[in-house]
Image (tube, rainbow, N blue to C red; front, side, top):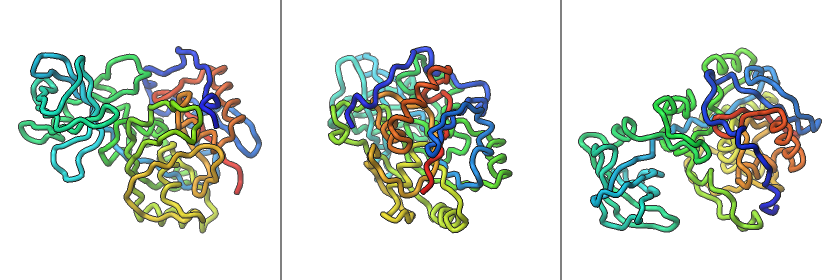
Length: 347
């Protein structure tokens, strides 16, 4: 594929800047690969749109990773925490922004002086290693004083309400700097409705990184260096998948992050293995899916790896038609926007 294959024109007014008052009040575009049809539904209809299936969710938890403060000289600085150091100490991989750049040895005062940071070293691609210090628990202070790292296409400052709404209701394991947005539509009632309709539920974890927003900047997708994200597939999910396959049930991935996790963890025959690791899997056309039968996802940015994944699953032409229909019918796009259920072709 060429980068131009991932282009489409979106009116600015269709980019959702705020969540709806109710999570499950979103619209749902149903795209059927088998019949090549596109239909408009309400998200609340989801349980009835598929036969009893296994829904797999990403239970990562977004950390309030955006920290605002000052350098010792008084200049404004912003850190975006990406990943905690593996040794468990209060060292983090971060991205930093300030008027004159950041250098090793610099000391920063963050969150109104409640948190101190020292730049340990600078790395490639604007990344830093920083050491954080606070009175008491650093992690607790970040949760209390950090800001939600809203995506760059949301043109407003994060509010207190975003700490709850830019988080799935089943979020459990901290580590993401962006939400697995397909899951933002679910409420306790929606999950209960899935159970009543005969669906089963399982979980994986993939900690969404900032690379999810990074546009492809090469002409050919094969030349794009895919970002790395850590993931975990538990034994319970491997067992749930085996039961689903034995019972003739399909697998529904709730979000592209779940698709990447499942496909990265499966062998050539589609057998899933419980594991903890990191993946750079870049799914784009053509790709033979081994685990996922259906996908629930939001609408994605032009020139993004996520749109390439959707095209690999749905087909390029049908994806283009679905996006054109969503735009024509005024669907809300991106993180706080509406959803799309893609019923895959029979295998």
